[in-house]
Amino acid sequence: MRIFIDTADTTELQEAFDTGLVDGCTTNPSLIAKSGKDFKEVIGEICKMTDGPVSAEVASTEADMMIKEGLRLAQIADNVVVKLPLTWDGLKACRALSEENIDTNVTLCFTATQAWLAAKAGATYISPFIGRLDDLGQQGMELIGEIRGLYDAQDYDTQILAASIRGPLHVKEAALLGADVATIPPKVFKSLLNHPLTDKGLDAFVKDWAGTGQTIL
Image 1 (cartoon, rainbow, N blue to C red):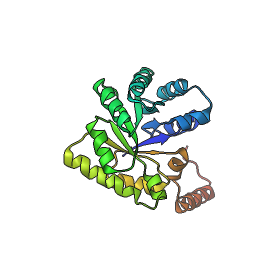
Image 2 (image 1 turned 135 degrees about the vertical axis):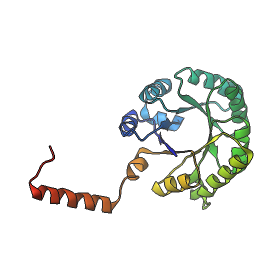
Image 3 (image 1 turned 90 degrees about the vertical axis):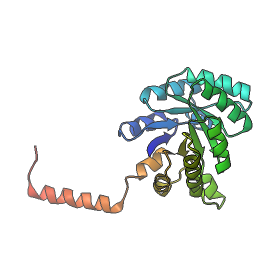
Image 4 (image 1 turned 180 degrees about the vertical axis):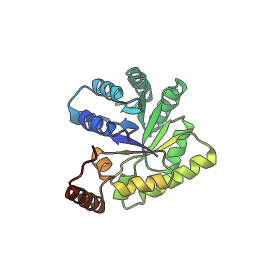
């Protein structure tokens, strides 16, 4: 399963990309608004930081304008993925952009039937929002399994991009259920490595080595 970072903060993104473990980035208008920078400039800057996919979301809600905005966003860089809402207009735009060989990410998915329609519209990625379903008392991770089963049964190529990830458990379960990608906030990405026994063990190794008075170099 690939890892995307869900942020528009270029400093956080560079730190994540420097690990060599991150494969792409997802953004949305809310995340970019927090940066206080020009939307297209931010997307262009991020695209220069990675060869991986960078999701940039349209702002309109009508199909014709979504298509125009998507075409404009795709001109920023070859690795832009146009992000579209899971509405009838969004699916119309998805079909049109897909026919122009532009990668798309259909977002705000909450049911397997929505994911099925997105796949039929030619979506490159589908983004089920796990955490938001959990917030409603539902089992968000079940949706990943349902979509995986549906796509495999119907032989769709659309990739499952698990979104609204709240913690390491979500990441692990998404991988086990066959998600192709998990897009996670920088804070969650850093937490994937953390365990108190790792810290305790390393501390002991360092102290024991220091006591030998030796050096490797």
